[in-house]
Length: 115
Length: 109
Image 1: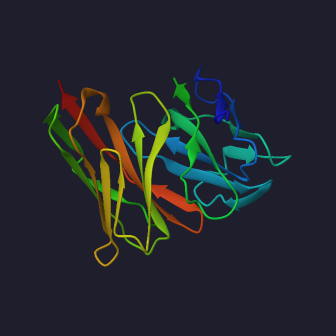
Image 2 (image 1 turned 30 degrees about the horizontal axis):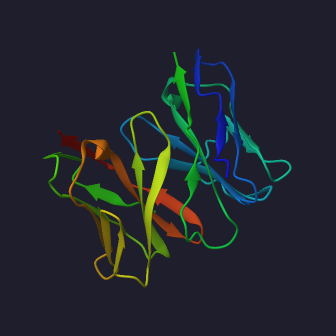
């Protein structure tokens, strides 16, 4: 079974620029999550999708962050414009439909550095 | 928020010793999970314990859950240098999972 794919692996941008991250979850996993992990901290949920619908985006800074999962499969997270404090690892995870009895599967993440 | 809080923040032990990490949380949960993260990598799921379970084992891992105290512990027995990583507890309710800040474990050879 292929894992959760994320790209790019690393990204360095200047503040006020835009950036986009891509995630392809495990086939058949209806639920997809984006987490932000700042160095030294635990992952923080940004947005949760169930198929192509948003379940929870309460912690997504909507003035600059956006995410979509148009066909209920892969997803894109965008930051526009980026700030220095957006420097973090952005993790994508997926889980099968229904209760999460076996844990989430995470991708390797995209490390963003804003300079 | 049902974010878990791990204790200690950092733990350093010798190879062969046991490592115990604790997690406390604030609200009722469906399950609690432990994840490992090696430096610069994604998170790897270790073990899940449901709210109606009290103890679970997986290889060298032992997890306990006390819902009355809203706490959990992760025990790694006979630690190895390869166990060096950050360990996170994550509490889950209705498919909404929140992480704590993690425990950084260093196992010295």
